[in-house]
Length: 264
Image (cartoon, rainbow, N blue to C red; front, side):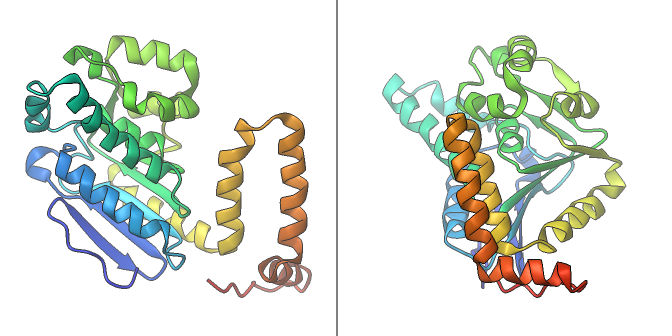
């Protein structure tokens, strides 16, 4: 990303192969408004075609990551017809699908509060790191609605048993529970959050760029394929990567006991 676009609800920073996207409505607890969803969609559509970016970090400015849906957005939805609400809901579904399919490694940095729609952002993260005081929750049922839009992504992250447990009560739970059910990968002290996100970013950047992209696509495909098809895909992928310039460089570097020289 050569020059980040200026948005009203986001702050986007580009640093070489790293893009940091900050939800930037701290006065509204970074709640997801229709404008923020539109701007995130625009940002991830641009990133989808940008091979120079290898890692995307998503975090929130201010005291919380994201407090779910914006109150004004919800208020307007009360006046919409069912068809209008369907089109409105589709915007969030489209955004989460874009984020889920992003070719870059997506690292989500959660702190403070992550509830409602923010749980969808966590569910599509390849790596999710949370501050130890973060509160999580699928709180939609307490508003008389359901966590329906995010459910497809959450299912692939935490499975049916924990969806039954936490979708149905709408209760708020701590970061250690979020880690135990698989929504979060690591929990760290608040003061160590940035350092840990950066360390994970550097770990990704040490790997082959095309290998990481291919592996992310593989992770998305394998669970959805019949066993024999998944096995065949694994064989084909391995053969293709071994003879690729990047694979050749990585294997030779390993054999020669030196650091590989990756090209982007």
